[in-house]
Length: 112
Image (tube, rainbow, N blue to C red; front, side, top):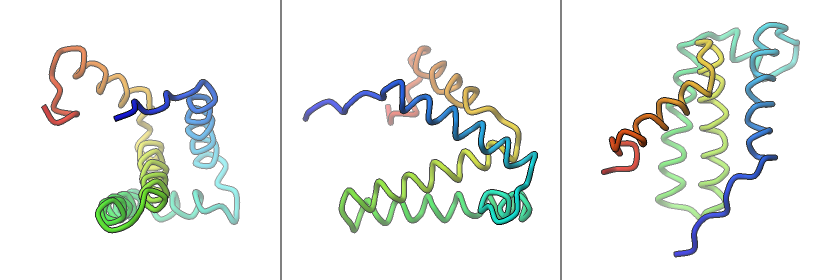
């Protein structure tokens, strides 16, 4: 198996920009924005959407090709970041926890 291509600085910058945009939308609530509509619906609806996208990602991975799995995983990541913004949990805290678990040899996050 070929190792996956590594994340680029551009990829990481995009994640930071997306998180910043979500917080900006939460504060400004611009009309016509999908993100605004989700924030207005509240935590329960956002959490439900994360669940829906997780299920769609699983189904795509089992029944369809890579393109569909990538698209659903993108939706899932977006909605997860939206949920974190709604709860005002910075994405870096999730990554920090993941790193800590890995550093301690607790590899439950990778199935060990």
